[in-house]
Image 1 (cartoon, rainbow, N blue to C red):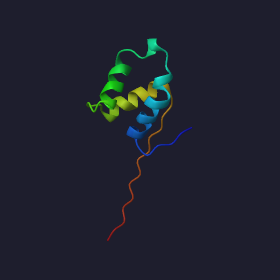
Image 2: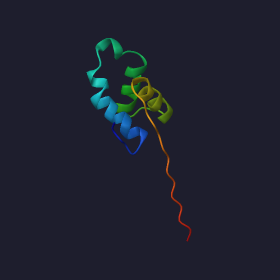
Image 3: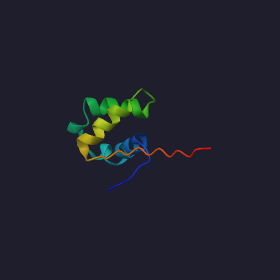
Image 4: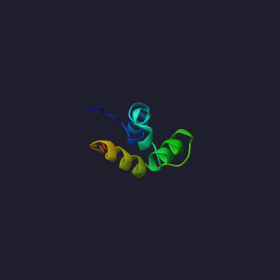
Length: 70
């Protein structure tokens, strides 16, 4: 299990460690467009990144908000 501080960080790790090792027939369509959008500064939503991460593994996202009154 790996932990990340954001979906963006997890997706970056996915591209560098999982995507690049996939066979060419899996690097088509949606994955290629997502890789291109992410690496070339296009628009890729957190929802889209999350859906791709879910296709290749189990993810658990927790949001923590700490509030301290003044």
